[in-house]
Amino acid sequence: MKKENTCWEDECVVALKVSLAHLEERMVASEKLVCASEEKTAARLESLNEFRGLVKDQQATFLTKAEFEAKHQLIETKLDSLARFMWITIGGLAVFEAILRFIH
Image (cartoon, rainbow, N blue to C red; front, side):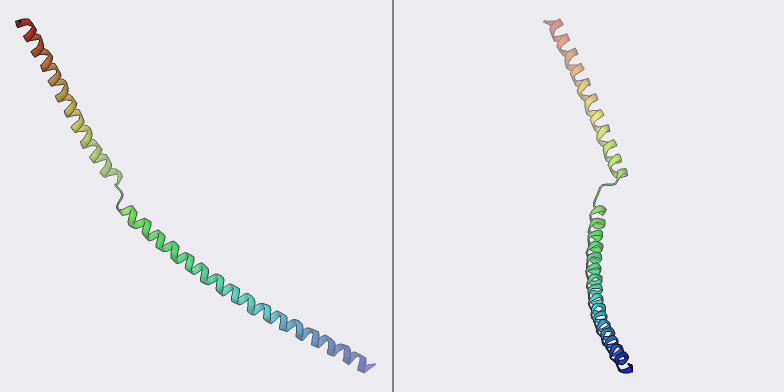
């Protein structure tokens, strides 16, 4: 009877060793996958940082709100002056035409 228990125990030990070997193989495979994922993540983060830098460089060339408002105010002032000049010229021409009609 002792021999049967030993045989059964030996089978259990062998089965445990096989299971342990499979677990070790799976752990190694899992570690390789984790390393590959970490490398891909690092590469992606690097490309995101590069993109962030490009956006920041591009943003530096954009017109700020203060610059826009200053230029817009200047354009409005010039447009108002031009409109005033136009109305004064039209008014002057109308007066000149009235005088010419009165004279003839």
